[in-house]
Image 1: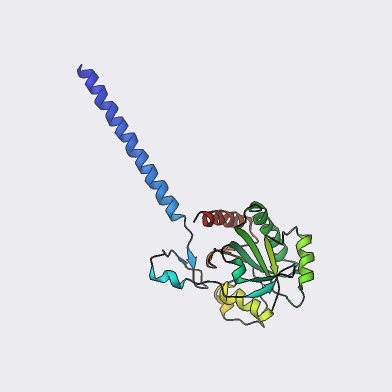
Image 2: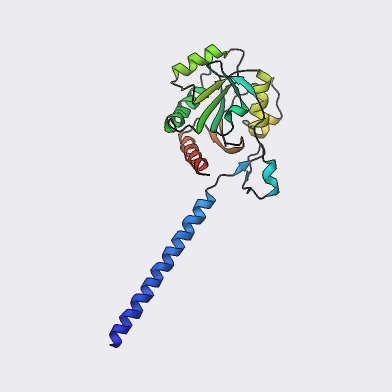
Length: 224
């Protein structure tokens, strides 16, 4: 009888330990998920900031400035056109022989990964709009299997594009704030923008590991 009671007590203690471990695992998973929420980037030095909706800073989070450009189909694309979408933005030009082909090839991976997700888009601004007309960008898009409904190739006013790249997207980090449109804009940066036009990630678009990281971050934003 005593042996039976001993076994029962031992079994109960074992069950309690298992339940305790399960509670810890659940708590760790909850913390991990919470910590996976992406930060905001409000300055050109890309200091990560985790700001909750109740925080007074939340209303003043940096957002992309307004713009009006034409895409490769000649359609007008504005900042408002992208509201409600998650998108990747970068800066290219059609005759670039160095980093642009690598960036475009890598962005194709993102395009294909989210081909059936209507919430995700890609935006590439040309930094040579005096060469990259609508028709040139259309040919460029066709040559690189770019879906014009998913991925916008934008052209427009040079000064406006350079301003957006440096002052709004922070594509050249701090260095860009010191330059005007007389300095050529050439960067491998790729920016993740959320549905409210806020910067949530910066990546090197020429590097496959960064493409993988960006893909994972897009999925996090889709669940946010």
